[in-house]
Image 1 (cartoon, rainbow, N blue to C red):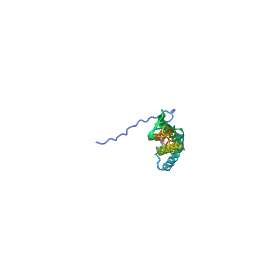
Image 2: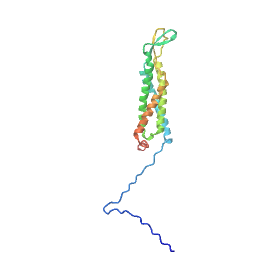
Image 3: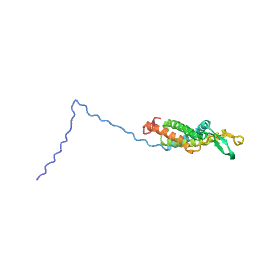
Length: 202
């Protein structure tokens, strides 16, 4: 029995009407997602840390001038007793340092963000680290300057009232500056919304 040829299947083709234009095709080009730049930002990151650390001196001077001293009375045995509510100045000194640190951190984050060509996690970490170094230096320098300002030339006698230099009794205030920097930089990066944070536009 002879094999019959297999007929090709007819595929229906839709022919658009003559008065209808041919369909248009749109091609959407998606650029490759930018990668995090590390090596090129290392040297600028070191410069950022050093530059921010220099601003510890102005903040230390402002704190030393604004922080209130404690008036205390000298008693037997050289013991110092705070007068009235003067002991509250211990908290005032710390809170003043924290407020100054937060303000400095916000300004630091905004200033570093303006370095458009270096935006990224490397510079953000460098700015946060530099703020921590600056806060530590500001605490040490501010306490030293305050001690020199309220230094007592003559040994006090029992019953004398002296002004005790302001001091920071807690080290947690050092965190205010780096936290303010990270908060400001992170908010600006989230508000930007670009994959490269606008580096290519710099």
